[in-house]
Length: 100
Image 1 (cartoon, helix red, strand yellow):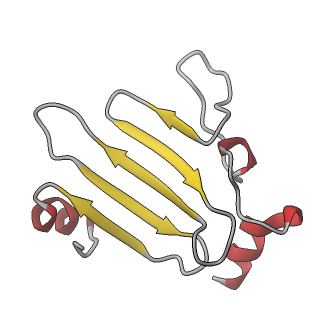
Image 2: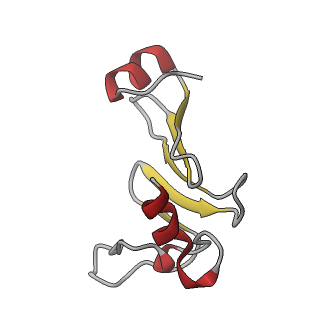
């Protein structure tokens, strides 16, 4: 976990605030790299925010018609993932996360 945190903090001495500064690349359907602090697909929005030990995180928000809506949040420093949203006991449990 310490090595992962060090990789995330990198040389900027802060957690990523844009998608292009992550150690993976998200590509749009046209193949171009995604930039900025958030990116949306048909049913998901991925967003990075915060730069410190207590607020640095990445969130994946699922929203759409006809399905469960939920938010997965991963805090960079702790690695803890939380799951919140509609019918969390069913959705979060099936994803392997505790509902909050």
